[in-house]
Length: 217
Ligand code: SF4
Image (spheres, helix red, strand yellow):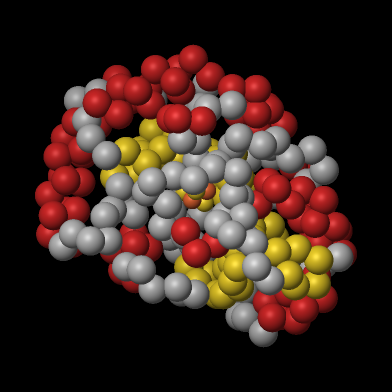
């Protein structure tokens, strides 16, 4: 079976409940959204396909038994992910998705799913199904200012999007010091918000701080 693939690499999981674990990242090409702040614009246009056995050969050379399907938007490839996981059962599988498309075939095959909803494209039904039907799920919101903490709280209370992680948006064009300053401000706002007493936490965008725009890491 084939899928449009942007890149395959081995790195550390830099966010979420499984932060710090080495994993093979399989980045699908193509997305149903086009966010201004997208840091993988190069993966939005599908160009090259790879067969499942070619992908397996690449990840077999990495020193890890974890696989993360990311994008682009992996939910566009539900059939492929389901097929791949069934065929190559010697890995533990994770998913990163924007939560606008529900995956019927592969949903139960992931150990853990990170859903990252975007305020401008909330699909309440899909989010509800991820919440109810995943083996394990968390929700991640990228925030840019204090007002968005309250927006996250209102949406998450309404749809029960817990546990959740807030991530201050890192802008590659700006110096890291500016990001640290912004994060400190958002930490204070978070500590004083209603989210502080819920299953919510704040983590920096570690991967971007360490690697910037570098790809394949
Ligand atoms: S949903 Fe993710 S991959 Fe798609 S455009 Fe937005 S940030 Fe980029």
